[in-house]
Amino acid sequence: MLHNRSIGELAESLARKEISSVELTRHFLARIEAMNPTLNALITVTAPQALAEAAAADRRRAAGEHGPLLGIPLIHKDIFCTDGVRTSCGSRMLDSFVAPYDATVVERLKAAGAVTLGKANMDEFAMGSSNETSYYGPVRNPWDPARVPGGSSGGSAASVAARLAPFATGTDTGGSIRQPAALTGITGIKPTYGRVSRYGMIAFASSLDQAGVFARSAADAAFALQAMSGFDPRDSTSVDAPVPDYAGTLDAPLAGLRIGLLKEFFEGLEPRNAALIEAAIGVLRGLGAVTREVSLPSLPLSVPTYYVVAPAECSSNLSRFDGVRYGHRCENPKDLADLYQRSRGEGFGAEVKRRIMTGTYVLSAGYFDAYYLKAQKVRQLITDDFRRAFAEVDLLVSPTTPTPAFGIGAKVDDPVTMYLNDIYTIGANLAGLPALSAPCGFVDGLPMGVQLIGPHFAEARLLNAAHQYQRATDWHRRAAPGYA
Ligand code: GLN
Image (cartoon, rainbow, N blue to C red):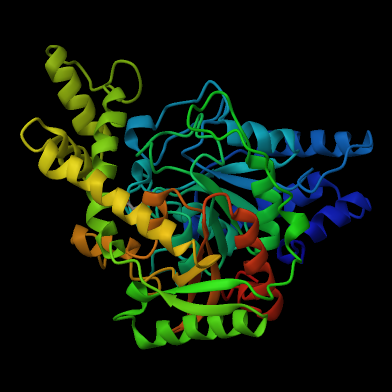
């Protein structure tokens, strides 16, 4: 079936004119129509635009153009501004916001000829680990519709897992690509901070937010990341460094690759999860990697550090949504204060309000030193721990999540338990490092992921190691029942 083919295989069929992009786009749109009512993975489906973009891709190909993404469909997380298309960020606040321009990520994928099928559901303003904070309702996990797909990019992950598109974009501030990739059995990569432009990506916590990719395999992710990456003068934190050929280095042998096993992350790990990670490490060893244990003593502080820094930045970023400049405006305000209070009160959901309040508190004059400044210092200690580790090893390996997908509703009333889902992923964001999650097996019939973390700008190494692992295993080929 078309939807089970890799991006490389689809590109070949398009090049040989066995299929057209219009046919391919119709195929995926039909799957979305049939399956999205159950999954709730997409907020907006842009069928007419998608077919027009597909026809344009077919014309470009007929005119002699080629490229790995020319005519390949994708879904964008609804955090990326899309010209002329609603960009809601999962919030009532932006329910009627139609972006007047494309985010750089969107623009670059369009230039590569990729076809946008629609916009994926997500946690409100990307705050969450389960996709339950969305104004548009929870996304369901294709492996079990009673369970969450993870978050905040849950709609993107569920879409790729259900084969509604060959790939999707996401963003990762504390784990929102890797965690849902793990819980839905697909591959997700968060690149180095600065590798992909944040221009036109609605800000949550600017020093942590980074765009990345969901695909079924590392090889597919390589094509997508290639098209998205690179310097953008419109993002002041974008890094002006050449982008390596990710697809071209996938086949490099792993012999001699030095892998560090994160001691702090293996302590107290649930035995079945530990067994899967051990097995993945065994495969990497079989491919020639050498392993050793490494300790990052400050790493266990990453969750509390993140939950000071991220809310602080969000309280500032979200102040722009005031009912005047953007977003939801309340009916018949009495005066200016009433306009602000009710517009923000009605426009934001409970989790976003919790973060804004926490963030405002930690930034306030009396508590700034005790919380925000302290968190920034601990963030530096965590970054230093990683730097020391990467003087000795090329990659770090750990689980991606503590548990498989949990039930919808199981953790919503307990924010701290919810926050602990990201215990293994947040460190990479605090240090700005690239990290990838690849499927590595099942617990109770539900997919689990293994995480690879690399030094800054080592995306090629992560994709190479994951690709070699995927050549030796078939976890990434498993489809959820009913979605094969
Ligand atoms: N789950 C984390 C949070 O709620 C991370 C979210 C993200 O990466 N966008 O903030």
